Length: 366
Image 1 (cartoon, rainbow, N blue to C red):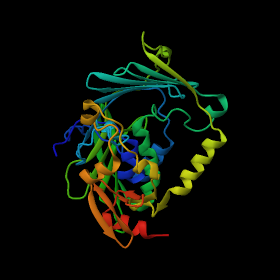
Image 2 (cartoon, rainbow, N blue to C red):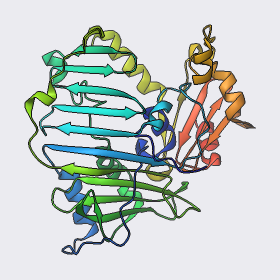
Image 3 (cartoon, rainbow, N blue to C red):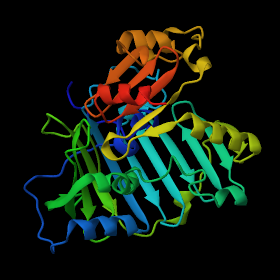
Image 4 (tube, rainbow, N blue to C red):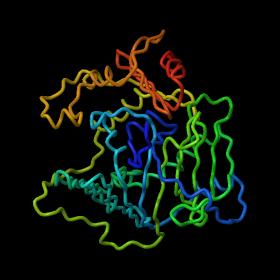
């Protein structure tokens, strides 16, 4: 498959295909542009990334991927994110942010001012306004999932795989015209994973990750990579974090809340999803609701049929996945260069950045 310089992240596919939920990629810096920087140990560099607080910035992200994913259109939630062209991020460093994602001629804008989140689509000229009450806003990440800096996920990734990795500093690079250290995490020999290494270009001054590259076994170029092509660490105008819907836009208003039903659903989700293993060969297992698997497709227009919207989940599996079976049962297997996932006929699933045999072993655990 020809690498595509598109996409920023797919939350669903990222969970299924990457260690620690990583699903990001980008344009690599020139191999010849290696600035001279003071030596730093790998452990000191990791610690500085984990503790970093970059503050306000304005940056543009570009993404490329060579995952080998099938052309599934919009049929799988999150898959469309892998076809995005670029993203422009603004943050004041104190909780306010603005994200503008461009895909072809359309753009999605998400603005978070601390108490309100606006999500606007130029394609449909619709906007959703979510008000965040004070008690909800105090909870970590409330309402900010779409506007968080994607490369910040690499900090969590470092924490999850550092103990099962050989960590080193492999010289320097220039990313978005800024000097950076090349931090490399390689799985230890005991780890059973499809990934060969993860490279994180760390800004020499702010210690913020500027580029994350994921390389799989048997390849010399990244299967996934996301990077800033431009970035400025400077205070941002206050009006960037306000939003007024365009004239004629359809607006839906909601209030974020954490009621007992929401808490119960979250608790049930925690119980339904099990983490098997740790580090690079972590596998997530759980069960897909029967109604999701058996959902009958709505009457499709010709456009919906082309895009894959409202597609029958089982029909998609028949078309894009491989039929497999074992002591754990039978089901469908989907593989990419950086991970694999299996969905059994009775609705169980297992997913990780691992070979299929590791998935089957996870399914067999009680």
